[in-house]
Image (cartoon, rainbow, N blue to C red):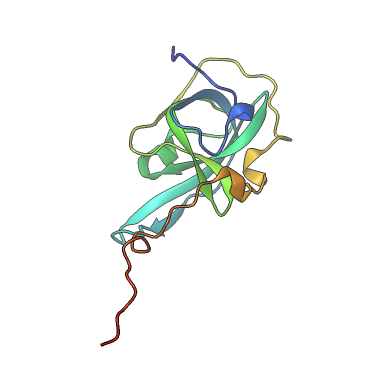
Length: 141
């Protein structure tokens, strides 16, 4: 059993190393998207997962799309929160895992959906442009 399990209601925009158990409430149809880095195609599905404290969208990529179905109880290890268009979503990345669990979850709370809330700018640190620090004013000669 994984230690340090958190509840969905405790997640913040800066949550990392997320370990939790939740029920798959719904699964969007799979779609194909192109990578912004190398234009390769990838399979993508958004899954709404919930526990007794809240719900959040989980993004599944490629082979992980097939690993869960609606109604499954899943264990997520080493996930992280990412802001997408100002809303929180749970991601697995390269190092996160998902598997079905035998734990019973009878009641889930979909009313407290963290992915439906717009996250304010105060909770997210903006990154400075890579070049903005190094630009020097042009000198006219």
